[in-house]
Image (cartoon, rainbow, N blue to C red; front, side, top):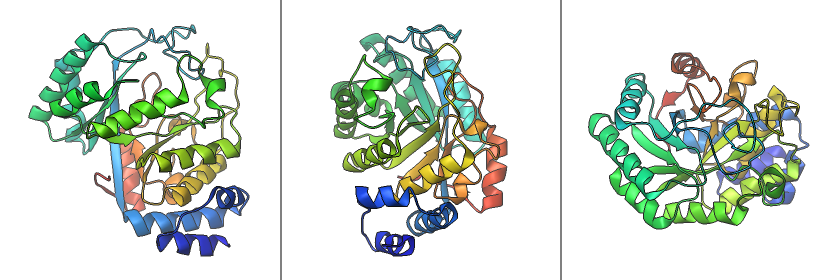
Length: 321
């Protein structure tokens, strides 16, 4: 099938197969991106889901993810501290909400939160929900259904848990937990009534097949918010010297993900600041969401800059999925 035929089929309810996605990976880029943006408009209109994150607990992580500045296995100079107090978290949430941000995620380092930390986070979530209308997301590692249910009852609406890469490639990225544990945590969050945000990091030496296989895994898991991170090589990590992806690399990834996950929020996330246009071309190639502001340990793009770009591109900030 041609790009045009595939796009039309998707907009009529069809799905792209693995073989078709691999063929699209070799298709003319501009034609592919134009069709992907048409699919985006068909399913998502001009809605743009914008979120911010706060590093609610930093450093000393037991896991050995090769991309991460916060892993205790590497010497990166990343800041280290325990759970932030509720007042600090609420202050930042209210500041973000005042600038039009729709979602606010509490991200914590480590394999998972312990019982005391979960209670602290519940307190912070309740405070945010009582003082702001911003939606609260959480990213707390490999929790179980009971823990997720407690956080959901406190007011959290979404869990973030990246698959990072394909099942085949994951053992090359991390060996202290498994792909199956990731998938189990996602299913536990869904069982607890939370929506899920899950994607990965691109530029870690993966093949195009790995990128496509991760999208297919996300489709099977019924995930509808998909962060697209571009590796920002951190000095001190095993991936410090990997080459950075190009704007065209990211456009193709975004377009493929729109074909494979047509109604999802395709969310540009970490590494966007490395792109010369800060993601603008990707927002015309099928992406319709972003993490704005600073990332966990690296600088990002200001909310004001992003809001101005969205207006220029004809987007309207709205919560999606």
